[in-house]
Length: 186
Image (cartoon, rainbow, N blue to C red):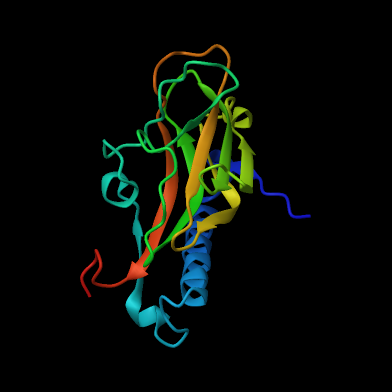
């Protein structure tokens, strides 16, 4: 059984952080090839990786990472602002590689990556409370979380006690793998 973990950013060197990002891009490109978005021969020529844009890629109301209002402790809330579970466009792959929580004190305890509107398949679950005693509340995933074309992304955080009644800023490091020309010019 593979266990996915989160490592606080402060425990990683700059080189290790770069390695995590490059590994996320490489894995995303492998998934894009497997799903027919490029051939192995053409992938380096036609695929690009770019940071996610919340409004354009997820359909959120604001171009920011913002949960719903955290009203009940122990309850899961979407990280996609006003969108419960967005679908990946047919011509893209999304690769999540890190998380950071800007809201202080830490209002969420758990980060869940699931697939499907009802969350039928769990890709990963991360304990965010282990980041509380770090200088910065952020960390890198031991392996990227990949969503392939047309998959529904159910990414949620669980409200930590006491509930604040306000939204939290939970930023996810995410690359979009797509063909050149879709967003980035060739």
